[in-house]
Image (cartoon, rainbow, N blue to C red; front, side):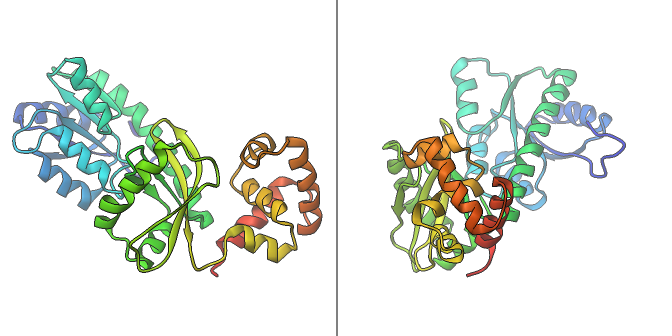
Amino acid sequence: MTSDSQTNQDIVLVVDDSHDALSLISDALEAAGIDVLVALEGKQALTIAKRLRPDMILLDAVMPKMDGFETCRQLKADPELANIPVIFMTGLTDTSDIVRGLEVGGVDYLTKPINPNELLARMKVHLNNARLTQSAQTALDSTGQVLLTVNSRGELLWATPQAYELFQLAQADVEWRSQTLAPALRIWLQHKPEAQHKLELSQLQHPLSVVFVEARNDDQFLLKLVDGVCISDEQRLQERFSLTGREAEVLNWIACGKTNKEIGEILSISPRTVNKHLEQVFQKVGVENRTAAASVAIRLISEPV
């Protein structure tokens, strides 16, 4: 699982109430050069995950006190832990149990007795996927974008540091996000908002709203958190470069990585019209191509207000 050039070993948390199963799986993982953490039940697993942030969790579905399904649900409800991939391990083979494991956030499902070679092969795939996801999120973090992703239930899956800073400013703690934000987002998303549609948030010490950016899939939505006191990114671009409102919108979407076709669909204009606006944007911003325009826009948006 590791290479000679890899400086940090993968850390995997194995959660199972069977000592024999823990021993078998731990031996196989350690032989593959993986650092192993172990837990005998769900609450202990959550505590370890919060302290040590493993790269992956292998989770038994059937355990006393807190079963694997509830453990995974709580893990995914914590924004700091939600991106850790979880593979379920269990003797249950009923389709409904498999579906349940995937619904609460599991990425894969292995039935016991565990075949170590199959386990390692599947782990490799999911660890690589997790690294790619983390790289993309790190790139977004570094741009200063105030973005977050939620699922169809409105639960926060991930947010950039800037989004968490705005939540803190508005005193939007974990309880508010679960009891007020999530239900509001769930209802809003059920109505299938279009790009740029805004939802004002309530019961906060500082005005905030969220803007719909795009649906990543059927159960993951990218949103932008907006400070109700500060001017919008489009307004900042418009004022800095003397753009029209539509030109500022086009430039902002260019900074988000959208193509002319996608921008046209978002703004209900033709790709040719988008290109005409871009010609004016390039001239006013003083650049020659969309990559340079996006870079200038991102730098401006990232500047503190």
